[in-house]
Image: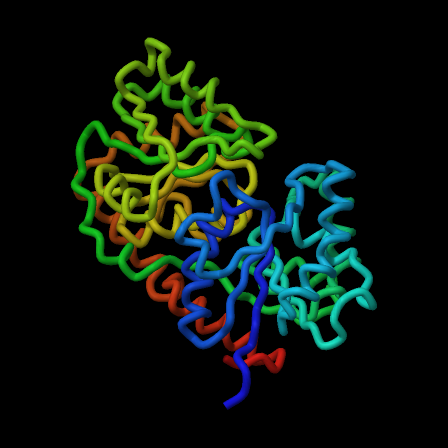
Length: 374
């Protein structure tokens, strides 16, 4: 029997590893890979959930800070010499963009590189100068990875159309089977909706609270908080708006929740809301749909792949509180029969292709393409 293949997963912050990658890392470990993790360190240690992956400190900054960026880029070859992985698997633009700037001659000669695009940092529709620059950088850096894996079909098709010069595979995104087993929501004339996400401006949480002012029959559960590393945290503003007389008693701020806590919280809600400005393929929306909860989302990559307007939820323009309020009003004025149709369509829209087990099978097949079978 040969030695186990070692895969080093790299992301900017432990939050990404914990919230997005942990089931994947655990699955790869069970499949026979030696799985390691590199990201920024945590106060008080890594935590028992990440310790099995023997984390290595590698701090890619989440914003353009030249000093920390140079330190991270120059540290990467030393980390690779220490871990000696067969595969370097990159996640999130904050880590994947600078990591691919390292000259290949400074990396181990047999090293393979994969990059999971959870969602490009730029938008394809209505691009501004920043979006166009980032799209160009991604195309130029594509050959620095042996494999690019896409969660979003839109990102995948755009990369194909622009002839990114590397192997491109559509991975998709999925959730654990247990989300499909949650009971159907019970319709109430004054429904409760759930927001899941970091309390940052680009998640649209401020827009949501402004929209909620004009829809008095809806209650809101907020599962999330701002991270210390977030540039655009709005937690204080959210607390101020939630205490406004127009919203008093209708908004419940729950803070960050574990997967088990979220499953319990989702059962209190009739629908999910995500007014985000940018996403990959949001796991929170898949979880809600799998549990039969329709979703009200913005018209952006990822969200519009999951939600069909009027079928399994509602799709509204970005950064438009009045339009979001109108969609919430449509939800609130449903009767039990029409809501049940929405709920049934929600569950059917993501089963079985969005089950996490299917995604993991595609991931291991992609590793095998690189000659790295478990």
